[in-house]
Image (cartoon, rainbow, N blue to C red; front, side):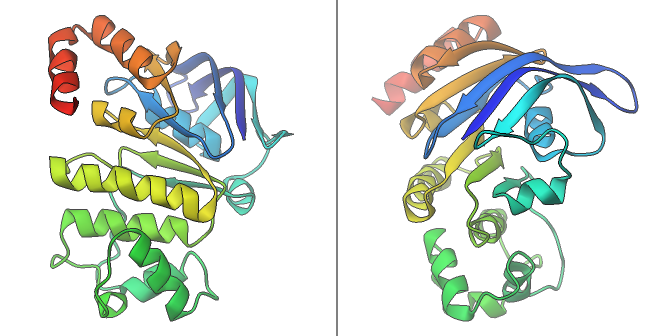
Length: 244
């Protein structure tokens, strides 16, 4: 589905090197987690896959479904089936949920919108008429943004820390939703996360640090390397015991 080879990326404004010779592969219908501390290059990687303008590719290639896409504009990549949901849900105060979803797919009818909202466990019959405002919880906003991505029927979903700031019950529900979404629309998911619990649904993982790939493999193997490198071995062991 996605093959990144020897990718090095700079900032167009500061000329700082952000990624160095990154290699990454995401298979069909695979959930692949990207882990690493803040500033390690995770979000930069997500943005460069979508072709954000503030980034400059110095060398390397990005192939999507066998096609080199480095020269394509962001909207062209989106039309091919690549989507990105940011860590902080979009805020369009006063816009109804219905109109927010229609922005992603203008010809969607209410039945289709209700179906994608059900996938993210928003079953309130009046949800389409609710407004994006302070009455919605942070969890509800994240679910609605996720629905806005699903309705476009992407083939590659990039999710930038969708589990951030969620409590343990909610983020475990989120992981269940992601597996259901993968089965429903037949997509691959590139999941940027800090949560060790993401290993419960991840087929593979990659550890980024300083803009470089440190380790790729099974989530458990990569998380062990992450803990050793970051000096968090005790915390990770505690997390494994809690998940046992």
